[in-house]
Image 1 (cartoon, rainbow, N blue to C red):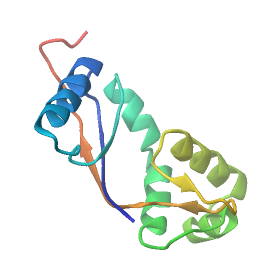
Image 2 (tube, rainbow, N blue to C red; image 1 turned 90 degrees about the vertical axis):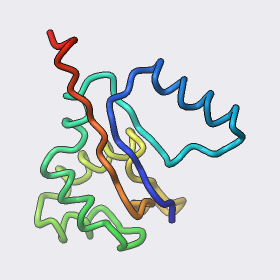
Image 3 (cartoon, one colour; image 1 turned 45 degrees about the vertical axis):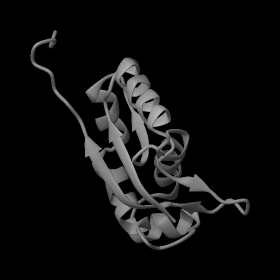
Image 4 (cartoon, helix red, strand yellow; image 1 turned 180 degrees about the horizontal axis):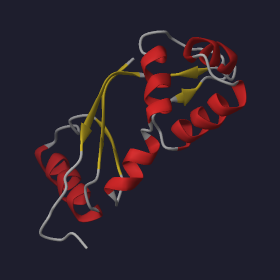
Length: 119
């Protein structure tokens, strides 16, 4: 199981600068990270229903979509759609046998709202 996933909204320039610093220092990045250009895009991925899915998957190992749907008490199609979105964005992974797994022990949110550049 991977340690930490950080979900945030850093710019490409900020991401590149961190990677270059880590490479220069010969150190690995602090954690897996997914960044969105816009704060709103990150919140769409982490909707209330998707957060509920992540909570039931935490520490559970690989689960089938029907089992996840049963645990969150939702329709299988809706859960399938949510898991597809989470998988497409790198939050959950799919095993070779088609089960879904949350491979992180911790998910940390790191969103910045810069009011100096708000439109």
